[in-house]
Image (cartoon, rainbow, N blue to C red; front, side, top):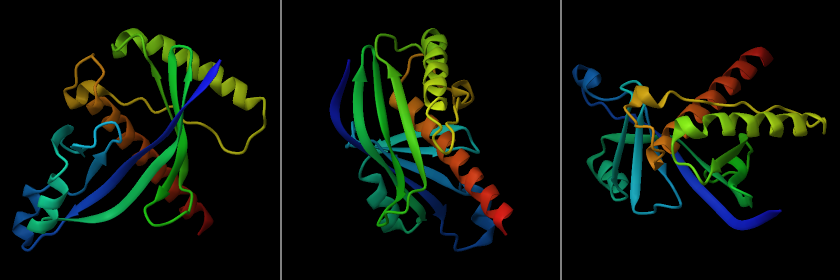
Length: 190
């Protein structure tokens, strides 16, 4: 039985450094992803992909960056939608839209297997669930396709016990995939 648990919304902002001198360019991450998760409104996460690093700060960090004028917002998107409970699984299904716009950039589905917080232990169960989900949707002849994004958490120094930092790394991977897909489809059209 599927239970509707309510709405969810997470905000993702790509930041680019404001460099006053080119000499300092190597000291700053070129672009990083700032993440605000609805379930943790007092936290702000920064995923710095090149350095394979996830940093957790207080939510006031965004204000500090604005006041210091060290980084500027390059692009901000919301992932928002509905949350469901299906047995031992929690599903969040929603749309990806730029802030202050209704232009759909993608659809995201996040699933969590609630009884197990170990990534290694739940990996097989999650893979089987995704296969069943893909097969079921394939029978409906819907346009588009789902892409299973599986980041390498150990590259970011994350342990096997699933945390919000794992969620941030997953979203960074998903948004990078969406950006790459968008750029390749635009290149094909031109």
